[in-house]
Amino acid sequence: MADVIDGKQVAASVIDEVKAAASALETETALKTGLAVVIVGDDPASHTYVAAKSRMAKECGFNSIQHTLPAETTQEELASLVASLNADPKVNGILVQLPLPKHLNSDAIIQSILPEKDVDGLHVVNAGKLATGDLATGLISCTPAGAMLFVRRTHGEDLSGLNAVVIGRSNLFGKPMAQLLLNANATVTIAHSRTKDLPSVARNADILVAAVGRPEMVRADWVKPGATVIDVGINRIDAPERGEGKSRLVGDVAFAECAEVASVITPVPGGVGPMTIAMLMANTVIAAYRAAGKVAPKF
Ligand SMILES: NC(=O)c1ccc[n+]([C@@H]2O[C@H](COP(=O)([O-])OP(=O)(O)OC[C@H]3O[C@@H](n4cnc5c(N)ncnc54)[C@H](OP(=O)(O)O)[C@@H]3O)[C@@H](O)[C@H]2O)c1
Image (cartoon, rainbow, N blue to C red; front, top):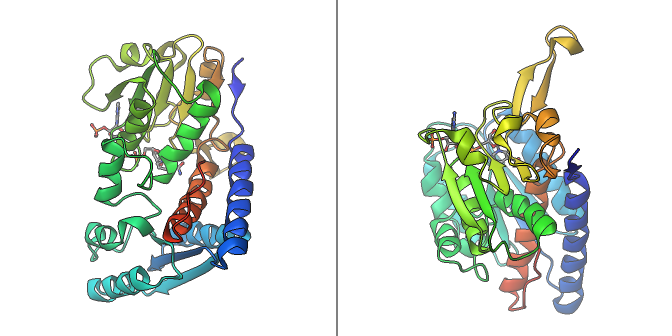
């Protein structure tokens, strides 16, 4: 049976480091780390995420500002709010919760956030810095940063000689994850829906990362014995065994059978999921240190 990574515990240790860093910065410079979270419309899932982010920001000792805008907000109104947050020295990080209502152009909004305040790591400047190997001045997308922390805690900083396979090529996860692995000297393959014989590509991986959105797609015979398996997928499936109309969350990896073959594996829920919010807090305190002209902590 593989070692199962406890994402909640790792996330809690990151949050402890963030709290200590934010408090040290405040003691040294009297500057309080500030995170502004913007939500537009009434999507209940988005409101739950935003509430969790705002709550965690407060717990970290940040100045946590939430802007809740009505669904009929115009592009110009949202752009002008982002411009005012860009100009506000008390705000170190800006997060615009996605998806935005359909009449708004989210890419234009994301690209209007100052790259140094783009704590979601979605601005092309931050994507470009990661792609060119500049990990020192950019901000890295939170979920891949969290998944990479698991990889580093398992294999160390240098992945020389290891094969990594990332299934999924989204801008949000697959591409930045592959860049992080490459920066750490892994030999990286990015697989996707057009990949031929995916099981045999996956079997080549010492580090297998699945970010697809297909429940339990990765089976035991896709996993190289002794591999590290990181499951990013979050899929809600019917669970009639729990009662009528009930559902449960599963990842993109068939956990029970793959845990028999892998040496390290992440569960769903409780694996990569809790890391996203922790790395958002980490990015915010990093941005605050840089804004204060201080050397930022590493996570
Ligand atoms: N906080 C978190 O824990 C967190 C954060 C982000 C995402 N996620 C989860 O991670 C999963 C992926 O998210 P995402 O945003 O990256 O999704 P996405 O944008 O939908 O990308 C999915 C990727 O999977 C590939 N794919 C689809 N079907 C495939 C198949 N049958 N075989 C091989 N590849 C296939 C797609 O290939 P093509 O490009 O060829 O279409 C695409 O590159 C989702 O379950 C999401 O909920 C979790």
